[in-house]
Amino acid sequence: MNKQFPKREEPPQVSVAVKLLTAGTAACWADFVTFPLDTAKVRLQVQGEQPARTAPLTHTATARGASAYQAFKMNPSAIPAIPGAQHVQYRGLVGTITTITRQEGFRTLYNGLSAGLQRQMCFSSIRLGLYDTVKEFYGSIFRENEAGLQIVTRICAGLTTGGLAVALAHPTDVVKVRFQAASSSNSNRRYTSTLQAYRTIHREEGVRGLWKGAVPNIGRNAIVNVSEIVCYDVVKDCLQRYAHIPNDIRLHFSSAVVAGLAATVVASPVDVVKTRYMNSPKGQYQGALDCAIKMARMEGAAAFYKGFVPSFARLVSWNVVMWITYEQLKLIVFKS
Image (cartoon, rainbow, N blue to C red; front, side):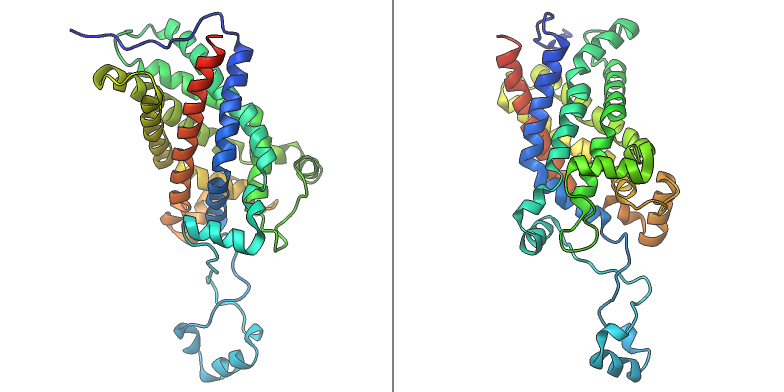
C-alpha cells in the first residue's frame, strides 16, 4: 500500500512575519556558532590569489647559479620572487584556525560577524521562512501527486526563495567576505566597521560594488538552497516514512547532515569563484567568468575546491545547528 508522505505540521494562521523572524533567528544562531569555520574557509579560498613578494630558495632556484645562491645568503630580499611561486600560509582547517589565532588573535575568527548576522537575518529569513509558503504556491500550479516527493514543486520553491534572498541580502555578503579575507597584519585590512565598509564600497565602487559577484552568488545560493532546504525536506520525509524515525532531534540531525554534505559537494566551485570575485579590488577581474577562467589557468581545477574541508565542516555544522534550532523554535512559536 502506498503511504502518503507526512505533511508539515504548521498551522495555517501563522503569519509570514513570524515565519521570517523564526527562520532568521535560527540562522543567526547557527552562523554565530560556526563562524570561525567560515572564516577559515574564506582564507583558504583566497589563498593563492596574489603572488608572494618573495619565495623560499629551492633546488630550482639554486640551479640558476652559485652567485645567486651567495647573494641570497648575504641579502635574501635582493632576490626577486620566483615567478609563479606562492606562499602557502594556511594548511587545512585546524591549521588555518590555529594560524589565524596565533598571528592575529581569536577575535579575528569573528571578523565580519555583524555583517554575517545581518546577512542571515535578511537572507535565511527569506529563503527558509518563505519556503513552505512558496512551496504551497507552486504546489497549486504543478499539482503533483501528494503521495510522491513533489520534486519539481520543491526545487522551484528552493530556487525562488534562494534567488529572492540573494537579491536583497547580497551587500551584506560582500562586506562579510571582505572582512573575513582581510588579515589584521597586512594592508588587506580595508574597513574598520560594517557601516564604514558599506559607505566606502558605495563611494569607491558605486552601487554595483555592493552587488559585486551577485551573478555567481545567485547561482551558488540557488544551488545551496536546493541542496540544503529541498534535500532536508525530502530526506526528512523519507526517514519518517521508511525508517519510521519520529519527528524529533534524531530526525532533524540526520536530515541536516545529508543536506550539508549535498550542499558542500555541489556548491564549492561557484562558492570559491564568488569569494574570490567579491574580495578582489576593482579592475582585477572583468567579471565572475573571467575570475573563474584565470583561476583555472593559473591554479588548476583543484582551486575550485579550495577550502573544501572547512566548507564541509561549516555547512554540515551550520545545517545541524540551524535546523535543530529552527525546528525547536517552530514547536515553541508556531504552537503557542
